[in-house]
Image 1 (cartoon, rainbow, N blue to C red):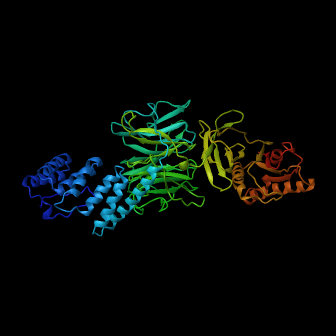
Image 2 (tube, rainbow, N blue to C red):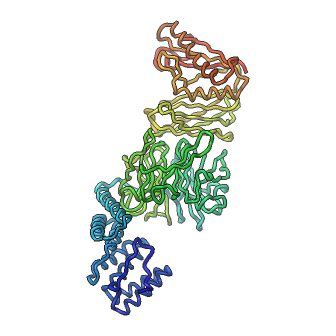
Amino acid sequence: MKNIVLLFLCLFSFTLTSAQESTNKKAQQNFEYAQRALQDKDYTAAVKFLEDAVSADSQFQLAYVQLGDVYRYKREYDRAKPFYLKAIAVTTVSADARTYYSLADVLLNTGDYAAAKSNFILFKQKYKGKDQVILGRADKYIKDCDYAVLALSKPEKYIPLNLGEAINTKDREYFPALTADGSSLIFSRTVNGNEDFYISQLVNKAWKPAVPLSKKINTKFNEGAQSISPDGMYLFFTGCNREDGMGSCDLYVSHKIGKEWDTPFNLGPGINSSSWDSQPAISPDGNTLYFVSNRPGGLGGYDIWKTVLSTDGDWSKPENLGAEVNTAYDENTPFMHPDGKTLYFSSNGWPGMGNMDIFFTRRADSGKWAQPVNIGYPINTFNEETGLIVTPDGTQGLFSSVLKDGFGDMDIYSFLMPSSAKPLPITYVKGIVRDAVTREFLEAKVQVVNLKTKENKFSDHTSPETGEFLAVMPMGSTYSFNAVADGYLFYSDNFELNNVKSDQPYLLEINLQKLKPGANVVLKNIFFDTNKFELLPSSVTELTSLLEMMQNNAAVAIEIQGHTDNVGNIADNQKLSLQRAQAVYTYLAGNKINVDRLSFKGFGSSKPIAPNATEAGRKQNRRTSFIITRI
């Protein structure tokens, strides 16, 4: 028995005794031949020798176990099952407790949950060892069985639809990524062993034939597991085994300039490590990057981590999402929905159908993650489900799989999302910034802030080639909106997004006027309480934009003007409008703007810009503005 080689590939190794040898010489000889084949990893030959062994000795229990082990290692679970059953059924030697575990694992991976649970329980009853890891796994899988039986009784409606020949081919397509307006789909495709990105555009509700994304991004190396920012301007992706890599796989980013992608660069040692770092997922505001890593300090093998972009443009030290999301097992393929709250990911640690299942969790305003929820059966099965993304409107999920109606290898499919797993509703502002006179595109800083939470939901510069921007905004709040360009008056507006349809986004063309004497701007995001003149915290974004304009244009002088509606006493309105204008004046002066460049005046209700007959009109008249007096 010295030459016996046990499958190191399996979860357990058995302690062999002479009783486990066969008394049949031919059976024992074939068994020993099988051990040599296993040592050489020649599993085809090993199976043949083991089959010959049990043919010669129908009671050869260990040979049955090893046949089950080989097929189990190869994930051919249906073929492994009868050999474990036979190993348990033979009477010459009582089955090792761990054979019940192996059988239970096979049953779990073929969807026979009730039988799997029974055998995990038998394993726990018979197992006399002290391996707490395997006992913990048995407990975990029993919970999976309980969940799966319940899920099978309450199936979700699920009809996967192939995205068609414009996207899918005989090759392998996977890891879809969508822009927030749903107009661009970027995905990975493997052709002749090389993994590259492809892009397709949605035109008249149909996908155009996909083309390679960019020669600057696609290389002789493998590129995959990408995440596109909602505005389509930044692509975060995984690159492996590159010369500038920190570990086996690293995170990279490329910025779109005009209509072309720039050369990608490694995100550096602040994020990447000597471990495996992959599967990035960027938040809709572009300030938080989620990714998967097996670096030290995690809770399991592969965990989800995050890093946050600071105001000075540096990424923070990666932080593990913790036990609210990660488990002692594996989590992967995170996807942060454009709502900025709902995180979809795969896990084999939370209760599921037995392998990697898709889950979602939602982040509260406090930053705490809710307990992950399994997306349900039959979206999740005993097979491995990973790589889900959800369309911006929350109605559809996109994923990759090998299904019977496919074009060859793995294809990209869509399905209707269950109501319980849908993200929060969103809309978006899509616009272009131009010069008001020349109509030329402008490079402008566009900023969107949630006035309720003070969160910065979008902050980026438009492209000077296209002037375009796209900002995602979850429903149910009010947002300030500013666009600033050097040498121009800034644009100011706000939106109340409470009852807006997600399929009817804001489409804006912002025409900025050059700085010139007499130009007038209404500051739509300067706020005061009723009959008060103290600036509210929600005014900070607008005040910052005004301050930056004054700092960047040292010759400009302005008069700040306060206005009211016609409700109330004329004298009181006059006084209140003056005090409000003075509050803005004081803010600027307190931030080192020379008072020689500043003045303020109150006009009360004397200069309305809308009829005071309606509340909507009176709201427009209650305003703070400024006029350029010198340049």
